[in-house]
Length: 155
Image (cartoon, rainbow, N blue to C red; front, side, top):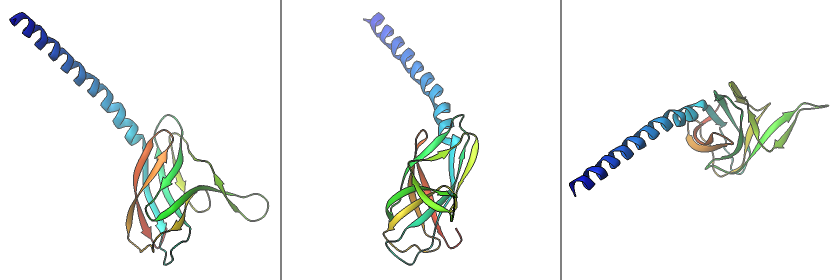
């Protein structure tokens, strides 16, 4: 009976050590993936109107070894969102909806009005200078990043 208890105790100890080792091994990789892509300076302009469309601008730093892409964005103050680029063909620049926004590896990508950006469609409320909201930015590889978005007079 004592031999069985000792054997079980020894096995439990080995399993526990194994789980700790696996957890330690996975943690740095998971942490690295989490910090490899950073979203900063997310902002939208002030708006006195409801039901309008506004650009969501932000800076994205991708330190990962492979490219990523923005697939969608969800914000509590807009009904929909679209990913856009600005074409500069013949004539005036034209905004065009795209399937995803590419985020190259080892680079900083600036989403801005005259390039890649996200349009937030049909705002649900007035947006006052200094207000902050949390929006979900969904990336193809990095997953969903909860991002603080600030309403600013000078986006």
